[in-house]
Length: 330
Image 1 (cartoon, rainbow, N blue to C red):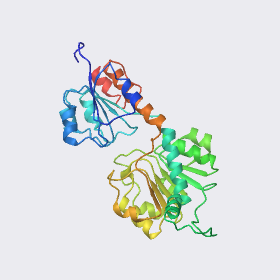
Image 2: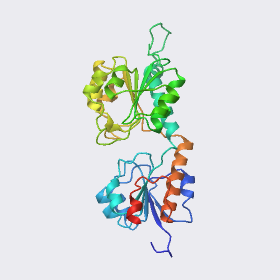
Image 3: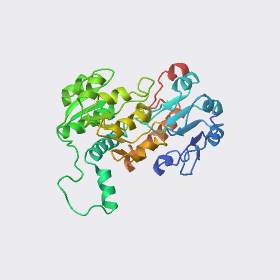
């Protein structure tokens, strides 16, 4: 980059103001200000000549995008996951990939627990019941739900968010299980959580929380066979990535009563929701709001902007995903 000019940064969606203020005066910033995803053709055009991009999960940073952004030195994803980015290709081209880890852990874990409670206690159904004018008298069997206190919680993916969900389960006196590729002895000591195979966890848990990244191994990790293993009164919660669950299989299980209910914050073809799911009362559907608190979203914007400036300034950001890129640069 020419030391005599300011770096150029494309931001594909309006971010909390303070996050963008960090770039003010230090970079030439081009922001897509409309309240909708940036159309693909405009996105590709916008990447041309840019030194960095701050993008969202719906922005595919694939070969086509990197060909358009030939001058890119940094791709900062406004998310902790980065399955929308071809990280290997970015590394091959010497492009740093950044994410926003850590700062959204508690907000997402809170939402996972909120979904458990909402499904178990039929919060959505009950709210609709009242708004419709159907609530005319209290009844002993009105909206009977499922206990959360003391139930068995199984967490799939024991990273930062999964661990935070387990900690919340501990506060509810739940029996804790987790599944991950490697055992976490420190987690077992701290929380008394038991490592289980995925099949064991699904069979034994009253509540299953999915908190794993999306990879080729986890795509459709939960399908017909896995749902069949779950208890008939079990609840499935997904705040990870939509394609971890086969939504057609989930609909069938919910409709036929193979499981009690589900809480979803993410979808297989997001933002599209498998239409039949909309018809069911035993599923709570949210618009991907896992990290949606003022504090969290602001800190994510700050982390993305700070990382971009560090990377363009020749420093190594703490939130660098593809550490191998440093060897190529070296």
